[in-house]
Length: 186
Image (cartoon, rainbow, N blue to C red; front, side, top):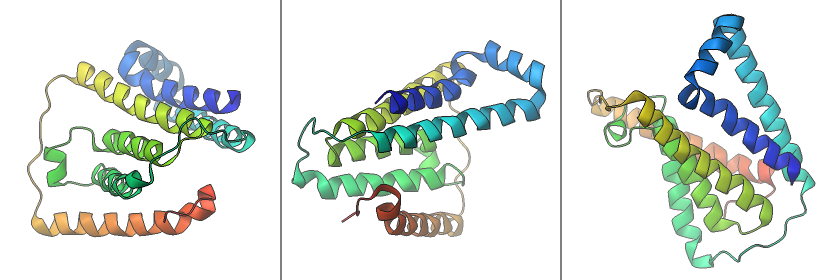
């Protein structure tokens, strides 16, 4: 459990530095330059992913709570919305006029949906912590950046392309999920 916890804490800490400790980020940039900062940031994230994966695989799952089978379909719908938001975070979309932080909102929904589907100890730690981090990050960014300035709405053609990309991403995730996690989606 310790490796998983360390991995999640490292992931969250590295991501929270720019919004909660801008002086630390500035110091880091000053010493290492833009490339060094990004390289170090990336290496720390890779280390966090390695700890998360090793931690996840080293834990024998123990049931903390029994998820309700009635929540399976709603959780899958939440998961689909999460992936649409993740795609929207890299594209112009009308959804960005409603959601200030689509990527972080997608991660929060992804974590919440997984908590509705999984009641074991490692799932509670990983998905609960990732959802909590995403929410904390949104609050920190809002406090740092102030008022939300919205972009203009994109064309309907662009919106349709965003939805098509989202559908492909969801299909790929469904296809790869059993291989990545050992659990089928259905």
